[in-house]
Length: 351
Image (cartoon, rainbow, N blue to C red):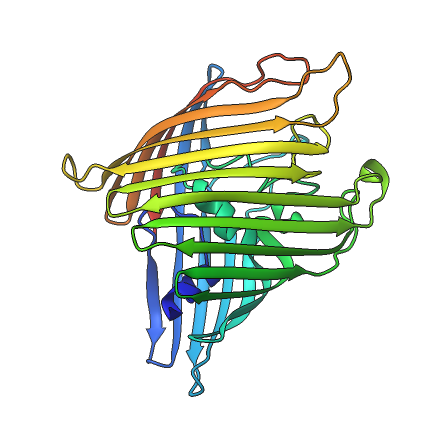
């Protein structure tokens, strides 16, 4: 149980051979360093580009107390392995914060954490966010006023969390503190709750709910709350991973250009290991569909995100190579197809 609690407390979405170097471990105190670096080549709308592959580096500290408690400190930064520039031509920062929290865990009492950490919503909603290159984009995890971190659905800012497991039942609770005004939004408070149950056959059922209150200024003055309710299931064994999620969202997504008052999303993901063909080789497929169900005027359509992905992954040692082809059938508020199909090829190294 203790290992399950720790895994939830430092949850990450990695569809590859995650590794870490144990720098120091005397049986009481330990330090490990891990991360990844990579590139993704994309062919999109006739353009060929070479992009960063969400590179990151993390430091994980732990100390075992005689009382049975274990203290943890985790810090993780994302970094751009190649220079990138914003729409105004300004160079983006090379390093940026991803995670940073301190925690205590106990085999029976559970795990407490405070700082910036993966949300309890993601404990369940992240089941379908497992693409090698792309990811889940229909549950509002990374959407909102300033992204999922500010809204508490991705790597939640200013958060206090509690997680525990009771047999097959896993629970997560979090409370998000107030935050100062940034880009027309000041968070007053937020909370989240998640629960899942693991069956012996490899099947898990789960649901999550989160709500954030704002003291708005400017653009979103009439949208003082964002809400996310998701539920789904997953199945996994040594060869097969399958997951399906459904979500109903309020003031959380941005399909229409502004915040969508109401939206509904579906995410599906599957991966099949083909070690009998080639060790480390697997096939994957995914589907994202998000609809803006806000009240639209008579001359507007409901904006829709719709994407189907097929791909293949090869893992060898600390490296991952992958290819994904995404078919984009999204439509804007004029009912016109917005996106183009994208072919992506990835090379990634874990350390």
